[in-house]
Length: 72
Image (cartoon, rainbow, N blue to C red; front, side):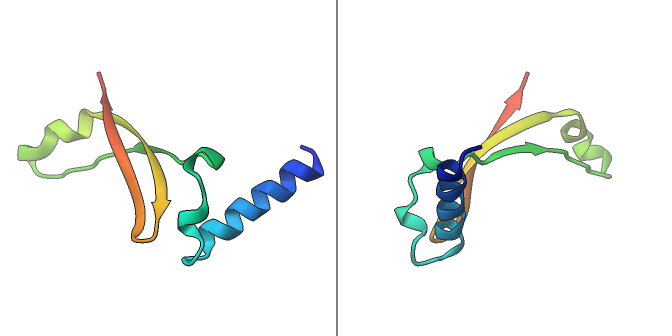
């Protein structure tokens, strides 16, 4: 990784960590991927224990917003 790339990544991380600058960061400048593991003890909800889910997200002034998708 070049020093230019490292500097850009540091700048993006810095702006994402500063609530006043969050909206200035274009979601195309970073990657937020999520995988989910569900664990429900109640028999009624056992079906959720077998779901495979992934998601994408982005940081907003209100917090993290993400979309979740079930993998068939």
